[in-house]
Image (cartoon, rainbow, N blue to C red; front, side, top):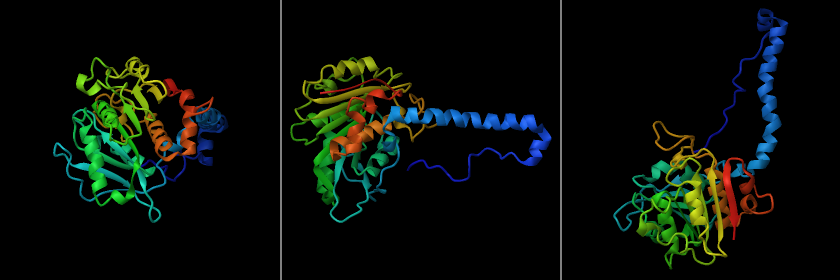
Length: 320
C-alpha cells in the first residue's frame, strides 16, 4: 500500500477566454497571479526542504512487491498467531533480513499495517505476533523461532535480525534483543513509556542491557505525554558507551501517530497527523543496520547528516 499521484493535472480549473471576458483583463491577471503564487513559493522552498529532510526516498514504498502468507504462523507461547509481511523475491536464492514486531498495549498488527508492509517493500521479512502484551519480549522471540521453522525459512537470513515495537512493544523489542541467544543486532523503540510509567519488569534492562555491537534508535512524539522527549533523553543518556545510539522526537506527534495508515484514522486517540516523519527514519535505520544500504547510512552519518538537520525532528542526536 502506498500513495501515488493520480494523473489529471493540478485540479485547478483552466482559465478560458470566456472567463477573461467575464471577469476582465485585470481580474484575469489577478487570478493567474493567485494561482502562480503558491506554486512559486513551493518551488522556492522545495529544494531547501528536500535538503533538510534527506530521507525522502525511504518515505516511498521500496522496490519489492509485498505479500502475506495465506495462513498465519501458529503459535507463540501464549497461543497467538503470528502475521508475516513478505517481500517477493526477485531472483532465485534471494534471502532477506528479519524484523520482529511488538504491538502496543491492546493493539494488533493491523494497527501498524502501513508501517509493516512498508518495511517489507524495502526487503525485510516482518513477523508480528498478535500478542498485545509483549513487554517481556518472549513472544517476539517466539515469532522469530516460528519463522525459522516454517516453509519460509529458506527466505530468511537469521544472521540479520532487528526487533522493533511501539509503546509496551518497544520494551518487548528491547527485552527480546537483550536475550543472550536472540541474534538481534539492532532495535527501534517507538514511544517507549517513561521509566515511571513503564512496568518495572519490562523496563529493568533498558537501556543498560544493550550488548556490545548492538544498536538502538529511540523515537517519540513531541506531544506524547507517555514518552516525552525528556523521558527518552533519560534512557538515551544511560546507553552503555561504545554502542551506536540515536534519538529524536517528531515535531507535533503524539503517542499513536505511528499507527497512521498513513494518516490518522477516524477517532484515533493519541494520533495528530499520522506516521509522517517516523516512516523514513525507521526504514532508513533498518536498511542501514540490516542491509548495509549506503543511501540509508548517509541519512545518519556525516557532518551534515539529514537526521540531525531535519526540521521535522526535535533534539535529534546520534552517538557511539
